[in-house]
Length: 139
Image (cartoon, rainbow, N blue to C red; front, side, top):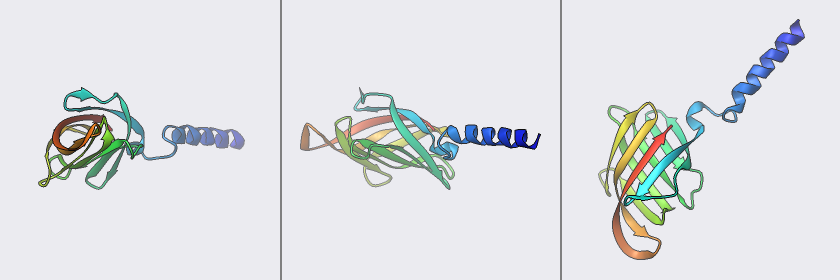
């Protein structure tokens, strides 16, 4: 009987860890839909979401061709920064109160970030542009 209880406990532990490789739920892989200047960027994209205190980070695993968005959820949800690295052919940045504009809607890990970022497109890297973006993530 004792052996059966141990086997059941071990099975429950393995199933619990298998979902996200032992990571907390906020770190599980999910997807995001992203448009830049109204153009689809090859959706959906795998992203990782993590929460540290009041800050949420949403990021692609590919740093060379991806994006990272940081949100502050203390009182109201606000975007702190959004960085695109050759993502959908665009490299650019939004930084709160510094570069571009952004708004966030959503609750409990389901966020939509819309705004504009300053940067350039891959086909014209020396031409500075302001591009609009929309990120929909369900963390």
